[in-house]
Length: 426
Image (cartoon, rainbow, N blue to C red; front, side, top):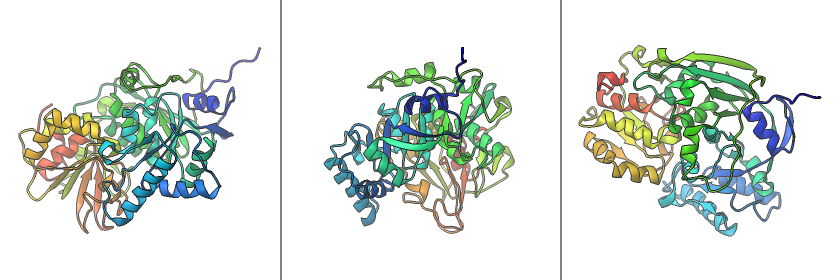
């Protein structure tokens, strides 16, 4: 009798979506897609590719999602034209999921919130941070606009099965340490190519206690380590998140105990303090206590990485009753309209406005140097975003530092990068 081929969670999902009993790393497979996503930057190119191959209808009007989020509300005429193209395509194809500005949000926070991505699914998006949905136990990865255009027509995609690496986290988190600090420390350890075209499987007791917001953050930044996808096995925390949101059945997959991993690393988080990535690469990571006195001009709290309600609550706890440093700009961007609304109802906006912050409607905006916080030459920003490449947030002579919301909020008060304990005791 043949023994069953042991597989990781990523391999199991890909096998199920390619009609195979088993797949192995390096194998080229034809995958059935559950959801295809594009935004106002990438969708126009995907729509062009869709038309160039002679396609007339999307494979499933309920499984193609368009989210204008990068430059919306439209910042100029070209971005307005991009959004108009999406709107017209969505109307012509009768897409069930096109989100206009008032219902919109940053795509990678919006889709899980709306229950559009579920465990065990195969999801692609023309945006590198599509890997966020691995936080739910889905296989989720970014693709080019041409690939997306073909997938919108066929519902299928060729890809190579990635190797998996196992990242195990033990211990209790220290005060003010979050999923952002875990992933920054991991990238600092393995490097920006440390998981090149690999599935980063996050596990261990620490992950099992991590809220969904922290799980999404970790999966989101798998791409910053070169990963093909990041993934976390669903558990009770996942199911609680899904209960009011899931509108269709889903299947939960788990890695076999004897599954093969290309690499495994273990981390004791009890020794970890809040982390900061210094310019100009996400792996240039230091303990915040070792950063020295780095003065900053701007702080951004938001993005698909840290614009969740939990992130805004952390910022609110630190900013309550305090003022930001003179001449510093604090920009806070809730990731979706629902988060915006909830933050307003909880009184967080009153805290932020009293502190001297500017609050934006949901948008990617400053993360990619788009608008709502572009940097001038010589300026420094501390952001809860995911990339700090040269020129990422504006002028090539500006600098971007990355952190979690606790460090960001505390640093806005001090006017320099600091540990939250300098401002408030947990």
